Length: 367
Ligand code: TXA
Ligand code: MG
Image 1 (cartoon, rainbow, N blue to C red):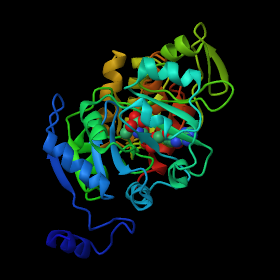
Image 2: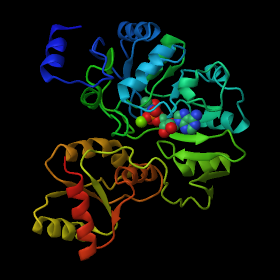
Image 3: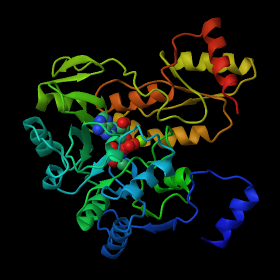
Image 4: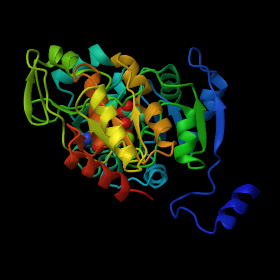
């Protein structure tokens, strides 16, 4: 334990009861194009020994732990403050490794793997009995993916074992799309942070459940519903059947209050002028709100989403207003995260009633 760590823990007079003060908290930059072998080897050794390593993937940064080490896995839950009922995704380098983690690898899985791996797609499959209950939350299924980021690839090739890696943020908060975000979320809660620069996609992987009779989209992400429908023919999303022709899905309702900034957020379902009217009306009542502008381009919207929300969160605004993007392609993932960040709450007009609601939300959640 460092002297400084000891001092600050004492002088603050309180600390996160789950915080592990003995973590190495090392930071290394690593080249995205050609990850330095000595850095990758060091990270792999740490994982092998049960340490926690935060690393970049093409979606967001993950907090990695060796999948076969129960202590390391439970440390991940502690570091994030994550409930044990929320299962983790296993990351591997090669498809052959997936076969050791699952008890079935159906035709659909093989087709999706061939088309989208390595990449931002997570498959939920019947688990192999050897996978730890901690990882699957004792469910009959396990989530697996092969990331494409060169640093993640190099690390997973070097370890040769499966690495469980949830997004490297505290539970319920916005995922980290840069190493700086990881530091602000989990300072001191990892042994090593590999900084491979900002992530390219910016939102988490798509999660598809293939364990039932019909494929189910559990979380929209980097691989779009349209792309999935092309391969699968049929897939359900939030209990609706989606085919290549009908890719208009409703907003999902599970896990509300996920991907949240600390400042309350409301969706604005109207044009820019409605946002301005609401800002004005709130301002008249003495409440500073902020409009968070999501880029028009959907790729840019996804890539910048979490950075924009973090910046907005850091201002002294008491309420964030965001207009959703178009619900198609990767825009569906953006809107899903916004919907959850807003806990499903939106404003459709600037009526007295709407302004009263917005005020209540802004004021009720003041620290
Ligand atoms: O892009 C990503 O997937 C990132 C990077 C680091 O790979 N990881 C990530 O992990 O987002 P996490 O733990 O933040 O989100 C995993 C999601 C959760 O919503 C979890 O409930 C779901 O996957 N999940 C994991 N195992 C599952 C299972 N067996 N059945 C259903 N959902 C599962
Ligand atoms: Mg997460």
